[in-house]
Length: 182
Image (cartoon, rainbow, N blue to C red; front, side, top):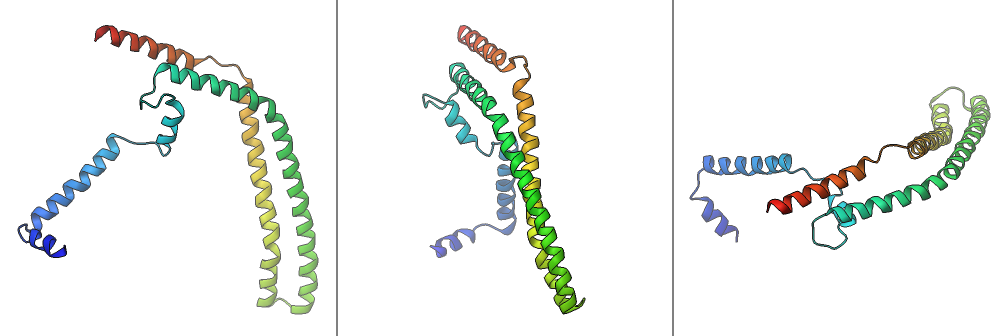
């Protein structure tokens, strides 16, 4: 097989092969720029496309919009409980961090007397500080989750104009107009 490829390449010089390679690469780059794809494009289309025809019409968008509105109401009911749970977890990690800090201080005080301030003591100090650092990272993660859940609660609880429904109505009107034109 490689002999066939090698014989075929004998008919082309380096300039034509280089030009073909450049055109191929430019074609892929231009296609990527002209037709960008979302990372989860296929999943999104599968969620919206209920009848499997590959096209998303206004009825399917309206169905997904209604399902999302129902999910938002369910989430709005569960959100305060989730916020309290995450605040409790953040407090628990704060207590764990305080305990780790106290234990670290006690261990370092004892090892300082035994080892002095040499390289072994520094190694013990780094190893003792790892649980404290991990507990603080976990607490920070829970506090960020509380912040995001509060933002979601605020966004869900504030009434806003139903711009998605207006867009669906506009697309239905455009679809009716395009059918009349054709």
